[in-house]
Structure formats: structure tokens, C-alpha cells
Length: 175
Ligand code: FES
Image (cartoon, rainbow, N blue to C red; front, side, top):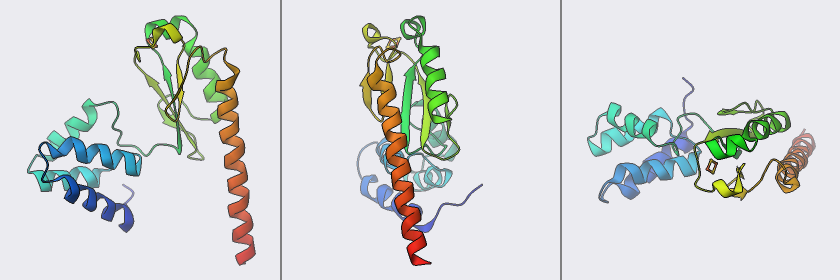
């Protein structure tokens, strides 16, 4: 298992300390760890267990129960595609295929470059907009036929490529 760096461990300790005196701190801590680190590492589960007196198994059970928590690091950008019945009928599978082709991320997985995660979700309660896709929290209705959806993914790819170039240039300048 890959070990967390000291900064991430310190973040977890601060988050635990911030919420420990609140009622029902476990969920609050888990939410903030997920938001800040992009996932809930095992070290966080251990710390929560120690601080709250809840067993590791119980905290782990909570993480597994709620779909908003994940124990795997997410990509920098998260794309959700609803695979509920209405969306499926309206072409959600084709939307998934399209996102896979564009990003290189498989369903419920992360692209090798760490840029994108593609998560299949259950019905989002917006069936009138089927098929629904969400990019970094922004909802796109009729996403299979809405060029704005594909454009938004391509824009992220282009922006990330520019950012990468700048980082490389800076690294070369230092040499
Ligand atoms: S099935 Fe996709 S929003 Fe309901």
C-alpha cells in the first residue's frame, strides 16, 4: 500500500481535530477528507476510528455505504454519467463510450494520466434531461447530443496540456 505523505497526514489530523467535538463527527470528517484529498485513504479511517472510538470496520462500512465516498484517489476532473433507466434508454451507454474515448478513463476508473475519473451513477432525479452527464459538478442534460458536453471535456484536455507545457518549461529553465 502506498504511504500518504506528511502533508496529507497533517491535513487528516487537522480535519479530525476540527470536527471531533461536534455531534456525529464521523460523517463530517469523512466529507471533508473526501473533499480535500479527493478520496478517503485507509489512514483517515484509522484516525477517525482512534478519535471517535468507532471500530475501523464500522468507519469502513460507512465509507462503503455512501457513494460519495471513495477509497481510491480520483482524477483531477470527475465526470459522472447517469446509468439509470431513463438515461440508459436515451443512450447513456453511448455517452459512456464517448467519454471513455475522449479521456482514456474506464467506467468507475481513472485515466492513466490521473486527469479524469469516470463514474457511473444511479438515477439523479433529472430523468427529463436524459441522458445526464456531469463534469466537475456541472450538469449537462441531453448530454449525448449537446455539443457543449464534448466541448467542455475537450476544453479541459486542452487547458491541462497547456498547464503541463508550462510546468515542463519551468522545469527546463531550472536545469
Ligand atoms: S435515469 Fe438518469 S436522471 Fe433519472
